[in-house]
Length: 207
Image 1: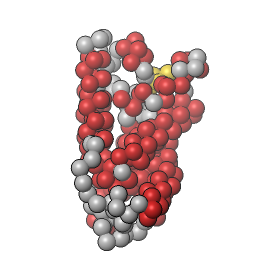
Image 2 (image 1 turned 120 degrees about the vertical axis):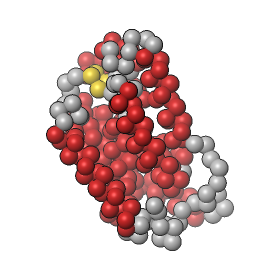
Image 3 (image 1 turned 30 degrees about the vertical axis):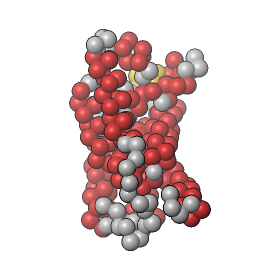
C-alpha cells in the first residue's frame, strides 16, 4: 500500500501487535457485556462506560475514552473490528506502536468530545470515531504526502471514505458529528506525529 521509495519507513521487525490487542480488548469486553445484561441493554452500556451527557457532566471524563471499546450488538462489533484490522496494521508499522495508539485513542477522544458537545442526545458507544480517525490519517497521507501511497491504494481509500460518509449522512442511527470529528482529528494529528517520528529516526538512525 505504501510507496517505500518516497517515505522513509522504519525497518520492519517484530513488535508488540497493538492492533491485535485492541481487537482482543473490545472482543473481551463484548463477551463480558453479553453475559452481564447484553450489549444492547442501556444499563449494561452505562455500567461498562458508554458515553452519556449526564454522566459526563458529573465528572466522569473517562467516558470520552471507554466507549472506544464498547459496541452495541454483534454487527457493530464486527464492522468496526474488520475496519480496524483493514486500516490499522499499515499505520501501526508506519507510525510505530506508541504513536499509533496515540492516534487511535486521540482521534476517538476528539470524536466523542465533538459528538457530546454538538449532539449530546442519547447513549453512545463504539470505535467508529477512531476508525474515522484512521481514515483521516490516510487522507492526510494522500493529500499532503504525495507519493507516500501508491495511486491505486489512494483511490481505494478515498472511495471507502466517501462511501462511509454517505452512509453516515443517510443513516439516522449513525453519529455523523462523531465520525467527522474523528476524521478531522486524524488529519490534524497525522502530520505532527509523523514529523516527530522522523526526527527521532534522524537522531537514532539504528532504531
